Length: 106
Image 1 (cartoon, helix red, strand yellow):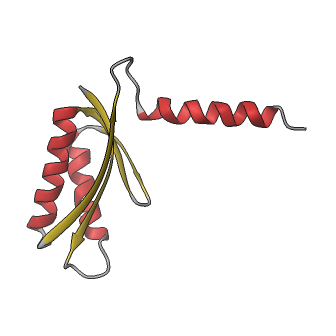
Image 2 (cartoon, one colour; image 1 turned 90 degrees about the vertical axis):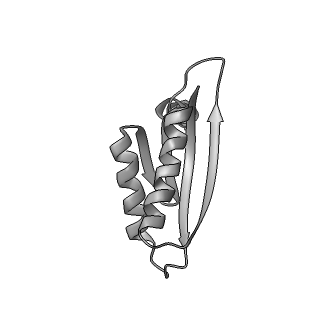
């Protein structure tokens, strides 16, 4: 099954700055070769269910290996069975509506 997720991994007990942990998680995602897009409060990842969830597990393993005693993760995910859809498709759908509505403005 194909899935698109929004992943936010937050290490606890490591101080105020978490950017080194975010960078480590990004490396894990990049190494997996999955389509992904980092944003200000997480990362969108798409791929097969098993591959994507395996990456989430590896992110946790990497962050714990860096010394984080606890991690809290927010995970949103979506699947479809009626058709294949990618992250860019979802964005393009909304961008098209915005362009079309802007074109009608005077």
